Image 1: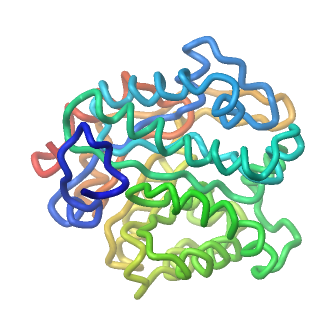
Image 2: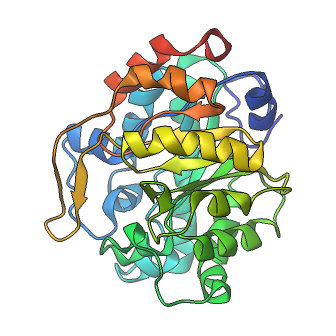
Length: 311
């Protein structure tokens, strides 16, 4: 049996095998679902705090997406780091337990449907640990080696929990992508790499073709694409990612609203349209879903619109 699979669900295909056969549906934003459940996410640890304080809420949020049709559940480890937990008085051993627990919570939730599912362990960018919005800027003033040193312990911890894939997500620039790829190539675990973008460039301003091109020839990377961005920017990025790498594309944008880091709230209006999933698929997307402010109802709507290969 696959060690990353709950015993309640028969072992199935690897994520890579499934992507070769069709499109899989990701979940939506974990934070908005937790807030809908009445959780307070004002703490600097964001949703990762609930891994310690209210793990049942994390599992309930995953379950909501699984019931909506999500086949891939992304863990609540985006903002979970040893450094961040330490600032809240949580030691390394307990922090490692909490990170592993994020994978276990997603496994339990996925099992409720009795369908084949996969767990993606979220690895957020360095800026997520800073909790100041810098994950939307990148260029932290750190070298690739320093970024790799930061990411290595948490990547190793999450990989040891045996998820089906590591989601290297919301990456704002090429330097951090290079650091993450350097670390994961030391481990035997599949990954996807997704950038946060603005227009036709990374958040740090680098051309997308160059950014996506980093994964060319790295078999460990099962998909490449974008997340936590405007839906319109995601539309354009799918074509670029597919052309630059020939790999399956992952795409899960925000609702279209804009995050205000100073006020710690969302502004603007939502522009997310579930129907655009058809265009994503035709351009090479094989992992599709939503990020911040995209909830279970939108994921259910996407499920209804997937081309037959993703049914």
